[in-house]
Image 1 (cartoon, rainbow, N blue to C red):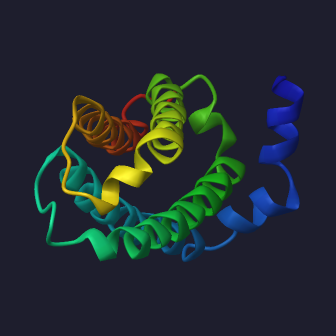
Image 2 (cartoon, helix red, strand yellow; image 1 turned 180 degrees about the vertical axis):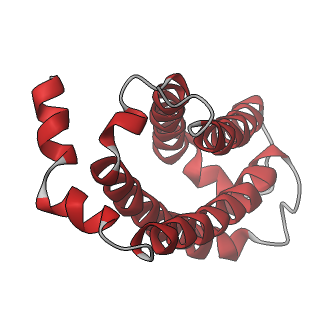
Length: 156
């Protein structure tokens, strides 16, 4: 496995990312701005699931979902580039591993919402299921943000 990480770290993509003093900060900026868009969009949807703004923003859920998915795509792309540019900062890093687990958990939570609860969005109903999904989503994404910030402090 370490051979794979060495190959990624020494690839042309990895070399390009660390070749300039502007590439990494640009990626950081894109990652941060898309994080803000994603978390803001998801937060509004989750607060709605929990019981806030039930009648005020039903029509906005689809738009916010599109924003969140687009922002997630940018976060994923920049995250892969970070990994390629400094593989050994992330491999074996507890904060990075927890961050990935929380992203998977948030994805499962979102899938459950889409499969089981998305029809409730157009109503004003608040159920134990919607409260649970909304609360877990907020918890998971805050955890992703905190763990992402902690990666630097837990670097091997």
